[in-house]
Structures are given as structure tokens and as C-alpha cells.
Image (cartoon, rainbow, N blue to C red; front, side, top):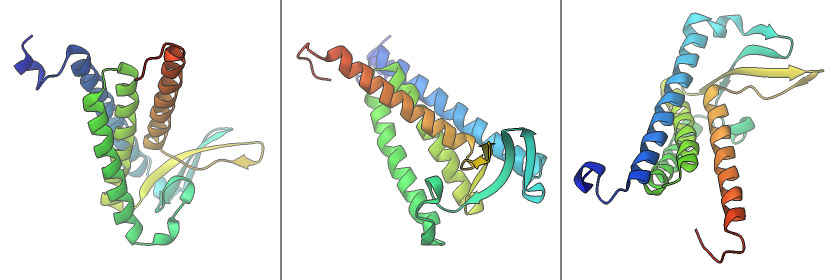
Length: 178
């Protein structure tokens, strides 16, 4: 394949990584937005408030006007703008990272984080808050309510951390840098 077809100087591994990242970005974004659409319009969770599914799992409607675990919720209406701009800046940085990586697991982690972040940005722009609905609880303990975008972001970060830790271990003692 010619360099013109691959892009400006892109190698096959880098192109493959871009495809992996883009595919996971789209998959996570569509799954997230589809699940939120169903929660809001199919199940009509805002009117039902909570629906028990299993003894430890319920679908519970929460409009999250803050960020993770309700942090920075005191920003009021300005939070919508601040959190959207912050998320878009992070996604821009991750997009640059994705364009430069030739590591498939890194691309997968980046794609899932970006898909989840954009899913939550869409919520903020459309509803003024993030749609959260996954509620885990057991033995009298209730955990924070979250959505599939949040779960994808967490999984993507875990992939990136795991890759970083295992890569460093693989290079230890070789005198090589990444």
C-alpha cells in the first residue's frame, strides 16, 4: 500500500491502531447513547424513578450535574460549560495520542475513553446533565449511580494503566526507553 493511501507517513501498525480506536469510539458512543435513549424514552425511567432488576442491581434515574461522584457540583449552570470544555480538551489530547500510537491496546483504551467522554458531553449539551442509571447495591450499601459511558471510561483507563505497567516491566533492565 502506498504512503498516500496510508496517510502522511502512517505505518500499517499506526493505521491499524487508528482503526481500532475509531471503531471502539463509535461502538461505545452508540451503545451509550442508545442505552440512554431507551432509559429515557423506552423504559421512561424519569417517571418510574427506579426499577429493580436483580437483588443487587436496579435501574435508577439520576441527573448528574457534576462530574465523577458528584464532585464540583457547586458550579451550578456554569458547570455544564466548564465540564464540556474540559472533556473536549481531554478528548483532543487523546485523539493526538491515538494518532501517534502503534500499540493496539493503547488504541483500544483511548477509543473507549473518548467514546465515553463524548457520550457524556452529548448529554450535557442536550439535557444540561449526564443521564446516570446503573445502580449497584448490596448488603445495605449503595454505590454511586453511573452509566455505560462512565464504565467505558473506567475500563479504558484500566487498559491504559495495565498496558503502561506491563510495558515498563517488559523494558526494565534493557536500557530502552519508550
